[in-house]
Image 1 (cartoon, rainbow, N blue to C red):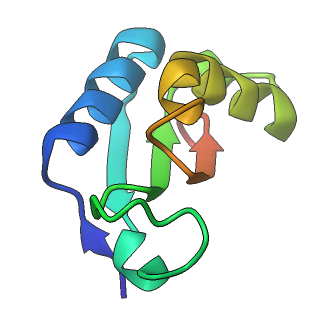
Image 2: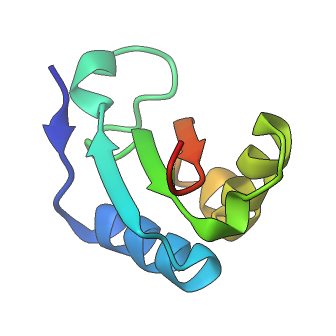
Length: 94
């Protein structure tokens, strides 16, 4: 089971994706507890994430293009604070 995210990094992820994609639905899930003690676990409890994003910005885009938009919004976090990010991106009505 996944935990709904709460905490500083969850708030930053949500704010960045909201600003970049104006989502109609956004869920930020902290999966870090599943990876405790594994490679990439930095001990903060905020290293592994799943985001579920529904946005009109994804209309007509491929899965890879959608993931790139998400990755671009979180680029500096992916370079340091986020070890793993699972992305589920869809356009409204999908």
